[in-house]
Length: 239
Image 1: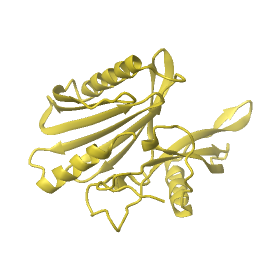
Image 2 (image 1 turned 30 degrees about the vertical axis):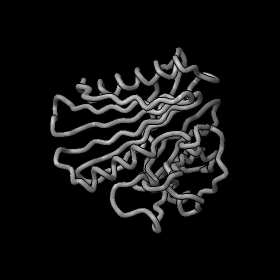
Image 3 (image 1 turned 90 degrees about the vertical axis):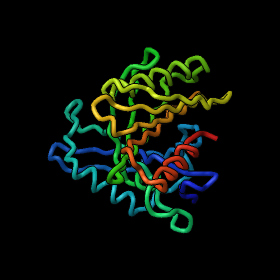
Image 4 (image 1 turned 60 degrees about the horizontal axis):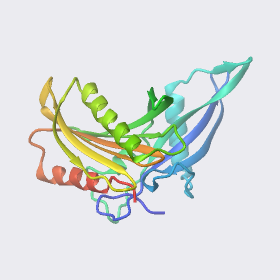
């Protein structure tokens, strides 16, 4: 299967969606793969990708370490969902350092919100590079199909929400890279509380899903690391 690296013309980044059930004794009853989503395909359908057993074992261990509490309905344990990024390094092509493979095995954090009058949930995955960090966020759009105007409104709302989450950061620059089939907006900003950090974010939205890639970098970032982030932003788009 293809692996993701910044120089590849066809990058790959996946979410593995898992179903788990915790019994009243706080022990796992079930842990199984529901489906794997190819994030860059632009579709929420299951991809023809089989997750390695070692990755599944690692995901289960992380979930067990989280000590999920049982969810009881009608006196019986019910299942819940969680997800992990799957993006192993391609050792033949990918140089060590800043790459999407740093997200491999990252467990999601979920936030619920309202979108277009519907309930929605965004899953976020993060990686820390020491002086810098990056995050990938994903959610399926709650409507069967969104129009161009709706996509643009969704992206603009996300831009403003991101700036607000960064303590009302000042947006320094915008770059509209949209096509007929997808809305793409990239912006950079600085937080008033820490002007030594630059936040750069790209949103891509098609009729089915929203993806975001965010980097947080300090002033004085090396040229090599700056180029690595530039390559990742360049490939972060739907076909």
